[in-house]
Image 1 (cartoon, rainbow, N blue to C red):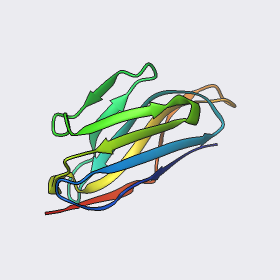
Image 2 (image 1 turned 90 degrees about the vertical axis):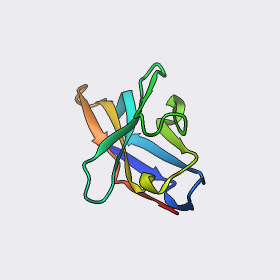
Image 3 (image 1 turned 135 degrees about the vertical axis):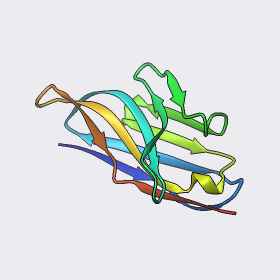
Length: 121
């Protein structure tokens, strides 16, 4: 069984910073792409950033230049550094990872439980 556990959310003032972490554990053979989504109240879940196994990154236009995604393959962990936060960044942030299960040797997307980020104006 594979689990993703997130941490690092919280309440911050506009212009502030946060760092989110998401650690994968369990029956992991390998991890492909990892990413972060967010969902604000009343809105659809949207992609924030993604990082491939080789380290290539892609960002939503709304966060380019402010957010940075990174990963530590030795720790099976993906990070999201959030800088210059705005009230419109307020949302629940979810991590996702494409993981090959060592038991079944099949790849599936696994999601974290979500962590709340609230930016006050």
